[in-house]
Amino acid sequence: MYRTVFILALSCVMLSGCSTSKEEMLPAGDNTMLELWNGADGGGSTSRQSAAARDTLRRPLTGSETQADAQADRSYSRTQESEITQQFPRLPNPDMVMYLYPHLADGNTPVPGYSTVFPFYSQTQYAMPGERTEAL
Image (cartoon, rainbow, N blue to C red):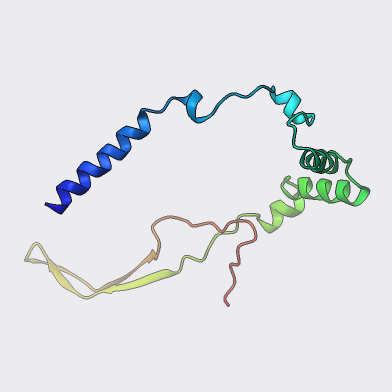
């Protein structure tokens, strides 16, 4: 009973949301985006504050920022050093040793006992750059 009432109420709410037009919910306004960007939104001090914030974002990079940016670009590039140290090292995949005891195959053929070696993981796993691979 309560479930039916809940589903009915939920569907009424959802259908009422679809009955509102976009223009009614979000009127276009009188200004274009360029006018709003240039501060014609009529906000007064708020538009001056946003213009100052935009000017801060538009400033040129300092020397240290340019150098740090160049170093960050080089850290992703392939060099002889990064190739040697392997940017994506293989994760350890220990070998598992299993001993099979002497047994009979197909009920009458004797098979002597032997050892076999296989990797613990079926696929080779690689570490992400910077991921710790040594023991804690």
